[in-house]
Each structure stands twice: as C-alpha cells, then as structure tokens.
Amino acid sequence: MTLFEWQLLISFFVGGSFVAFLTLFTEKLPRHLAGLILGMPSVVAIGLFFMAWTISPEEVARIIPATLVPLGLAALFPCFYIPVAQKLESTRFSCFSKILMSLFVATIIWCIFAIPYAWYEINTLWINMMVYVILVWAAYFYLHQQNPPKPKAISYSWSQKLGRGAFVGLLMVAILLGGKYGGPFWAGLITIFPIVGASSLIIFHYYYSPQALIPAFQKYPLGNISICVYVLVVMETFPRIGFVYGTIAAFFVSFIALFLLSKVAKI
Image 1 (cartoon, rainbow, N blue to C red):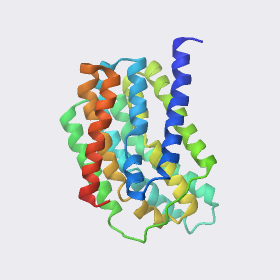
Image 2: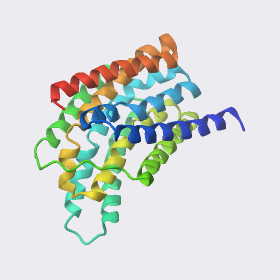
Image 3: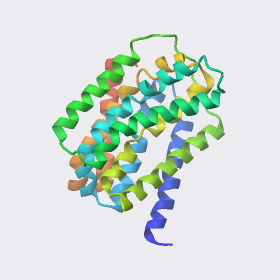
C-alpha cells in the first residue's frame, strides 16, 4: 500500500472509532456534561488534523477563512431540515422516506450556498466572519421562535453508534480525497459539512415528531460557535507550532469557549 492509502485507512478507523467512543462515553455522563463534550469540534478537529498531515499545516491555515460561511450554514442545517420534515409530517410517505427527503433538501440548500466558497476560494476573513455571525444568530433566533416540550434523551443502540462512526470514517476519507484531487478548499468544505448534526437529526426524527426536533437542537448554534473558535485557533497555531500541538491548543481554547457559552446559556 502507498502512504496515501495508509492515510486513508487510518483516517477512516481513527475518525470513526473516536466518534463512536465519544457517543458511548457521554451516555454515562450527566446530561449537561454530555452536551458539553458532544459540542466539542470532534469531526472538524479530526478532519483538519488529517488534512494537515496529508497536505500541510500552512495550507490548512490558509483556507480557514473560506470555511467560516459554510460553518455558519452548518449552524442553520436544522433550520433547513425541520421545516421540510414538518411539511412532510402529514403526508402518507413512510418515516424513512420523510427522513431521506428532509435530509436531501437540507443538504442541497447547504451545498448551494456553501460550494461557491470552495469553488471561487472566497477567503476574506473579516467579511466571512461577519456573514458567519449573521448566520449563527439567524439559526439561534429561528430555533427559539417556538418552545415545545423537550423530548426524552435517547440511548443510542450499538448499530446507531457504529453507523455514526462509519459515517464519520467515510467523511474522513472524503476529506483526504477532496484535498488530494480537488485541493485544500474542497477538503475544507467537506470537513465543515455537519455530519454529526445531520446524523443526530436523522435519529431524533426517527424516534420523535419533527416538532420535537426544535427543543432538541436549540443549543446547536452555541456548539457551532465553539467550532468557529477552534478553526480560528487552528489558523493561528498550525503554521507556528505544528498541527499536533496546534490541535491540542485549539481543543483547549474551544473547550473553554464552550464552557463559558454553556454558563451564559444556562445549559
């Protein structure tokens, strides 16, 4: 096997195993601590780590500004998914069909607005940061317009944990392939796709009505802010101290940011 093939294999198993372990670990924690841990930028962190390993830390830092608007759109992903799910609720389609159609529409909307940032390499930090703030605020505002009762916490089955891990593993492979054949901007775009949020929407939608998705995802934009903090720290640290120490530093700062946000929001 070539070095790149080994990197693909390692990224699949490391990325998938890490997320599966995180899901299992947080089930044993109090709910507020579990939410804090799951809000950490695990998938983005792994994706950027393997991008830096296969491309270079400097290239990863260079494309960070272009990921900010797609990241803001990731905060809006539940806002794309939930209205479609609500519209389909009264139809005669099967639950599986409703989930697939809701996911398809939400993904298409995300792609329409996110892809131009990779295609045209729109990389101006301050403009993208302003748009990001507007998008996250819009997501938070939409998800707090209604306040239906919160659903009970879900205990994931082993098949769901393994499926979630496999999703993430495949995403890691897609990131590396995107970086090799499409360039770092495309790899960065794939990294930012909200795979954890999308998989959570699917599972919650399967067990509950679309209306119950709103309270379940009301804190989702706050977790997105911790990811933004993470990528901004990566932009500064990867070229200076390398991607290993840069990853540790970014995790530390983003955890502090998430902890402070959780106190402000009274999670």
